[in-house]
Image (cartoon, rainbow, N blue to C red; front, side, top):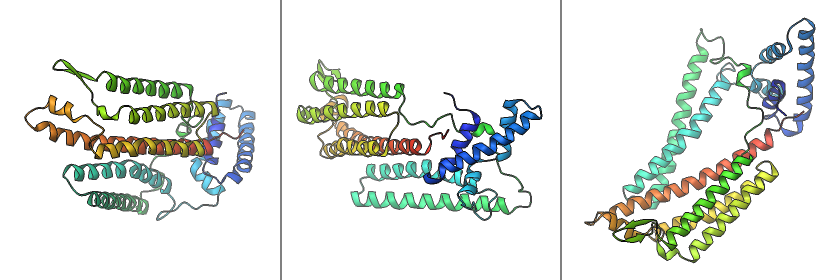
Length: 323
């Protein structure tokens, strides 16, 4: 059943309130909205317009939730706290990981030792985060102290309510897409090892090292099968849970750590492919660069998948509409 604007508003308010308070807050808020709706409808206002007007008057759900939870919103003052928080969180989620990835990749390609790469990446990421927090806060503090500042930077409207239900990654289309992708990847892996991925100079060449067959390839196929089963379980459960997200983390580690180790030993990719494609001694250099990029891609995909699963589990746990 499609959620009403009231359902979505109650969801937006209660998702950031401690779980033990959500039911009471939801009941109280629904009763208050219903009373105001009845008054407007009795006065001759259309139901749809009345609902939008009542919710608009109630204002930003996050601000209302802070009042229910007795949680003050303040930076230098409370006026722009929510705008500051939303922008800063968004910047930290996007800019810091990209900066860390770029720093690590640059140092790796330049031949820096492992310890220097880790230290430089962590230090650089912290520095970027500190600068983001400082400059963003400074700008909002100056705006908030200005005499012209009287209203929020972006006035809240009903159109900013979250979707009917939070996206939890448990839709049928998500499950089918994941299983089909894993099946295609498994077929491509077998084709690469048993036949070859590219036909060059009268022979088939594998992109992955032939030494991976059969044990490493077999282990990866088993892990991919387990991942397919996990996606089906998530669909049948109707949502990600923290237990499933934790299992997904273990599965990613089981796949990514051996892959990166094999890559560091020169045993994951097939060096003969690159020396054949790029002769005159340049193939080894290209192989080294491709290996570094592949390692970062493997680690990045694993981290993204782990974080994504936990975010979906968190949304599923906090985002159920209380009816």
